[in-house]
Length: 73
Picture 1 (cartoon, rainbow, N blue to C red):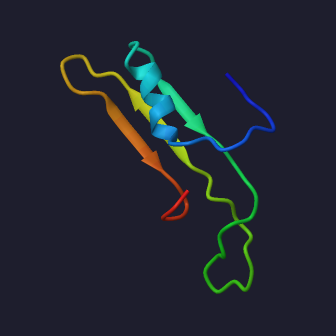
Picture 2 (picture 1 turned 180 degrees about the vertical axis):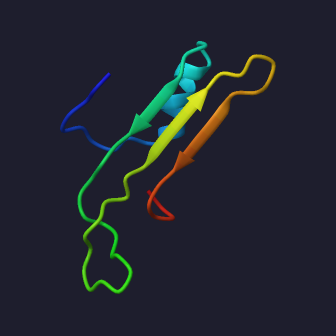
Picture 3 (picture 1 turned 90 degrees about the vertical axis):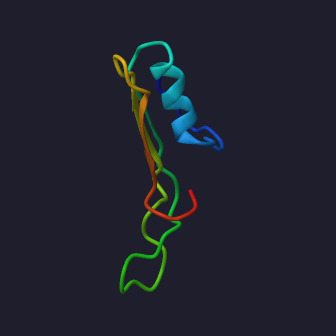
């Protein structure tokens, strides 16, 4: 599924887990406006760019990776 010109995504991991709970691989990411100042930078140049990946396990719990470029996405 692809969405364009949307509002706030919420927790990317939540959306990826929805697929994993149905025995599918979930992949969720988004990009936004400039919010992060790079190292040695003077102004914001990068977005928070949250990303999440979830995969079901055979006899193990679901694997979930959920991260962003900043401490608050």
